[in-house]
Image (cartoon, rainbow, N blue to C red; front, side):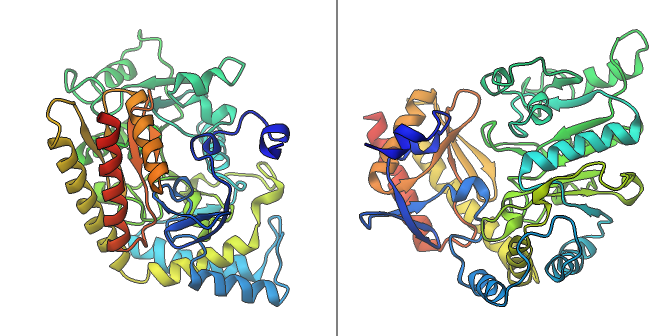
Length: 416
């Protein structure tokens, strides 16, 4: 009897597409119980930007655990948290001219989003939050209310209220000037639209199909929010920590969101950690007004601080990620051009790249063929029509080329 089939809930999903039992992992590779290696171009859905069992981070963790460092700290002061905060301030925030207070809302990205929504409503006294078509912000009720995917929203089981979704960049193919409708609704006293507390946006919609927003679109959104005293929340849970190149995905737009949500690779080693970064004037929380048991997973502080010191003292990782991302885009473009009879589109930014295919069925065939060849990739997009590539940022050029060759074979096999 398969214990996963008999005891684990039907809600499990990734294991259905990758029917292997994994036993160990190193760098860009996972190994199953039989020792077969798989190139991992999934990277824990973006939680493993520095690869599996990164040796530098592992040494720091082992040393911390062997000296009986605090593991569970709630929101108490600990030496590990202090070191993490110092490192985040000195290597990430201050060099970018960012003034944020750091909130630890809980272990995952949805916790960061929930805290952001709650704080925005607390600060403004308003209830409405604006999100975007094809957005994904998490599976808890508040995060689902600003998520676009119908299947995920339906699972809530209750009405998802006090939000409205508007077209993301490119959704209407330029037929309407950016934000023209929202601007009109906000300025017309007869529109019936309440003034929102906040707008929440992903600069690249990961689960929505690797759709990047244009820099000028993001700047326009920031200006609109400023004109109407609406807080701007950037969900950088998947695209932050260098996934698109710079540490924060919004840096190329030169905007400073009021609130930023981080998780996934901020934990360094794949450990649970989430941050809600807020401008100091918005930090109106009363003590304990938003809390949770797992706000202080101290091994994550240790791994994160070590990752920041190792990879963010300079811009080498950023430059490497951008170069690798352009290489992936070139190869995907060649794949698409090799089949002019099949409409394909290359999407994404940095090392979050995708190949949009005519149907979800075809994309699933590609991913299934990739798994059989020893490559882990998943699908994304409203109909699962995009083959999504998110290798560790530390992937070597040889590993990247191996994985792209396997993907090319998988596309050929699925088409033919």
